[in-house]
Amino acid sequence: MFKYFLGEILLLLHEPLQLGDRIIVEGFEGTVEKILRRSTQIISERGEPVIVPKAIVFTNSVRVLTTITHRPTNLGLILAYEIGLPEQLKH
Image (cartoon, rainbow, N blue to C red):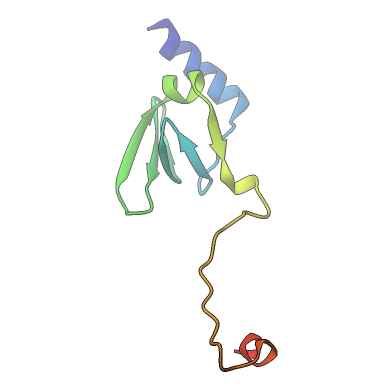
């Protein structure tokens, strides 16, 4: 009980999350949709709602991806052998 209470107080004072933030906590990734008194609701990429208790947010690492200006990504690129590279880059 004390852990939940302390988590609530500290999160209210610090406010590390905002609506619309993209976060990862305890293996769940999603966008913060609601910040309630006892929990934070995120929506996963598949549209599933995930309810995360404030105690979990307080006692575990939370990655806030919204603060990242550039994100590395892997893209598959297929180049045609018959067409020169400058021509392919135009499209």
